[in-house]
Image (tube, rainbow, N blue to C red):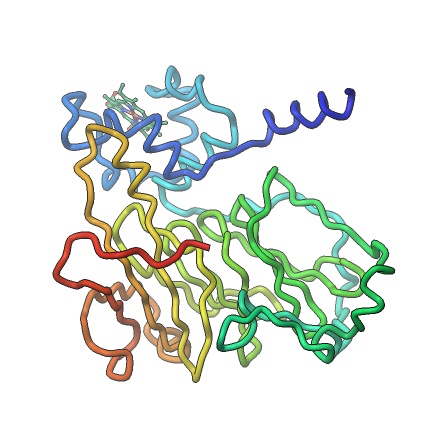
Length: 320
Ligand code: HEC
């Protein structure tokens, strides 16, 4: 009974929605061209730092609205609308000792489906254990996600590290043997997909605002970052596939949420697969949301492929 009570209290304190959902449910009724409230449009709010938007919700002109939101939701909507500003990394303990390196080799599980056919089959060699050992497994270490009550990102195991994203946008690299923390990186929004490790080594993943990231997998330093789709209600939930030097990134929608609001003119999203050449993206820097129809072989840096380019809303890629 006590456990249940504590669990619920934690859920109430920590639960944070995605910023875009808070915007749709609490803000868009006024902050939309169809509203007569003359509230500034999201493009105008994008010029404010997210910290200033939190202040507006706590002590400024929006405090009546802010009073109905918990701290996590205020931060989520502010980060969704405002300028990125400095990262908000959670306070963490358990870092690996300085200069520590993961033990090489060992078991691996890289990406979502692992192989090119998405079989999700784990060969004995990659697992590092036999089927007979599975029932005897014991807990070696556990990791608690700060600021979160759910965890979506399937962990990736590569080169002796475990990589995983989280609901507050922090991506963690842990030691597979001991669970100590090598680094963490703050993405702009929730990271639901699995991290993909490629040559370099690089760590690739997307977030729920269609930003895509390439980090140095050893240090967590950003190599490049790109916005892959400018439609405001797109997101990356499916894990990218790295094949033959190209990253294939499925873009999903959450416009069905926005469409529930009568003020929102639905719908402008269409199914989208973006192909990125990691090496070229590193050189080009800024956002490259091409909506060109050129086949991937002729793509300069990144191109999107829509299943039905002529239609306003084509079939959507599967959301994982
Ligand atoms: C009932 C209508 C309404 C709702 C709902 C609403 N706003 Fe506003 N908001 C306004 C209006 C009107 C203004 C312009 C106010 C002004 O200039 O004093 C405004 C201004 C703002 C500003 C700029 C403030 C400044 O000082 O420049 C921010 C930031 C903001 N809103 C954020 C939000 C967020 C975030 C939400 C949802 C969590 C929200 N608002 C919900 C009507 C609304």
